[in-house]
Amino acid sequence: MTTGILLFVAAVVAGAIAALSGFGIGSVLTPLLTASLGTKLAVAVVSIPHFIGTALRFSLIRKHVDKKVFLAFGITSAIGGLIGAMLHVWLRSAILGYILGALLIFSGVAGITGLSEKMRFGRTAGRIAGLLSGIFGGLVGNQGGIRSAALLGYNVSKESLVATATASALLVDLLRMPVYAATQFREIISSWPAVVIATFGVIAGTFAGKPLLERIPAKVYRLALSLLIFALGIWMLLHPAG
Image (cartoon, rainbow, N blue to C red; front, side):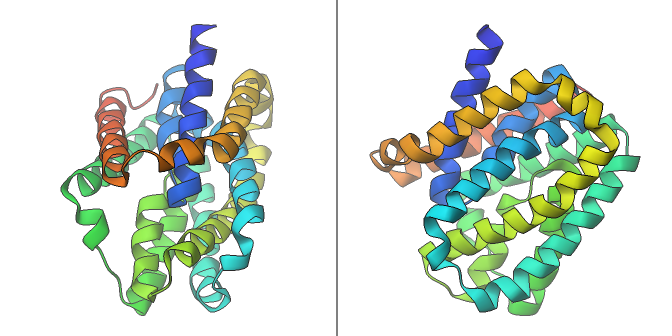
């Protein structure tokens, strides 16, 4: 019961953060579920609420998508997502745990030090970063930090950045999820309570959490999120297989 409540609260927070920044669901929920499911299955399970939350967010902000940037960046991200999902199938849970832990620590440090706001990529480097973000998304379900940093190099508005990042993430989900389903279908179905709780939490966070977070100074919640992600990364390195 306590675990279910913690998962729901974490999902609400993750959904709210993603509504503002375009990412955060995988960063928060995957390490949390790794403790009980192992990294490999946790990534597959979290992909469901991630997809639903991303699709919902896309429906709300789709008019802000920059189509030219999406075609240049989103396609390479999707290709990377498929590659990452295929690698996910063959790698052991412990290896995936170490990769996820390292990515979380990098994202946490980048947020704490302000590096994430200073990172910029040119358009060519941005496409490469898009491919890498997709690979990490398919591999361990964590791609948002790299994707957002890459999109900052395209000189688009904040609204377009979040909307285009959301559209790219949705495309990655559409390509990686069938691979997870084909290889871990029974395990995912057996984890349905976690899927349902996390999904309802993400939906609630997307709708209700955004106004709440907007009352908190952006620097405060971003620092708090970065510290949380950093701590989760340390935990993942110490417990890579769950």
